[in-house]
Image 1 (cartoon, protein in one colour):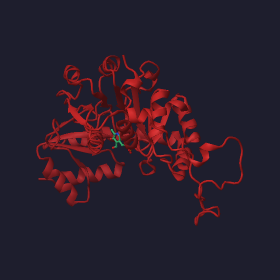
Image 2 (cartoon, protein in one colour):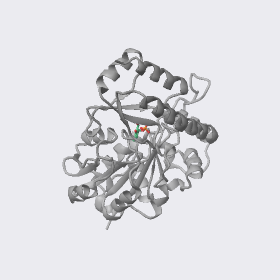
Image 3 (tube, protein in one colour):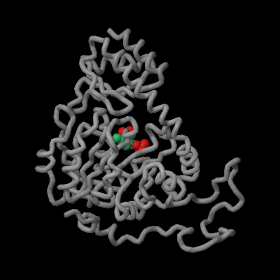
Length: 348
Ligand SMILES: Cc1ncc(COP(=O)(O)O)c(C=O)c1O
């Protein structure tokens, strides 16, 4: 049986979190001489002289309306990369515990594991980029704390079979992290609705992709109240700055714009696939549920260099296991996609 107390690190269980200046009083106040801020203001039109809300009440309230999840089940990180790091720091004992990754997948899971000195057990995806459930079951031991599943997966673009993820959630006594950074582009349902079903589920999403706010650095984790409380305890107190909170709030009121970009991205993705299929050095284009496509070619390095020489940057994934010969191409604007196709046309 999954038990949060069994997997939580002892030092985190015993941690007294930093108590910020504004945490220590109740009620209304108008004179704030408690946080050593500059009381005169900021040398800007906008005033940022006060520390931001550590628990981002307003942003979470709006997200809660959009996602249908109470604010107490939402954690905000400085990008979902911070949420990934905080999961390691909360649950994995350096030099002792391990996590399971299913490559090819998003690179930060491995980097975060390395930074935190956590062993990684790699169980590669199958040839059709799905989970090897038997391999995962064999790899799990008493010190396995986290399993990262990215769906839709980066860099392959496909969604992971839902029932396989559910099998993991039902049988693994650690935390299953389902990274849904690209969910807005997907035909699949989010796992957020499963939070009531599985106490060991953490769903990651981000404002960096479909929401067009990569520069603001806001990632979300959705999980049980217990897990969110732990993550809030471990995070730096003011991890989402005031400007990001204000701008995110404005953006979250502009869903129509985001939805129309998502539609347009999917149209452009189909066009890009059709265009790329014309080239005989394109061997395969994998089905995508995301805003990028993984393209298998006869000469990934050659095409990559050719594009770089023309000022076009794609991601060369040809050295990644199961992605030999592959380039990962983000869907751009119609103009950008045309430039890409025209430039590739000149590749010999
Ligand atoms: C699968 C996946 N998760 C998380 C991230 C990081 O997102 P953020 O910008 O919120 O840190 C990325 C960024 O490329 C990603 O591809």
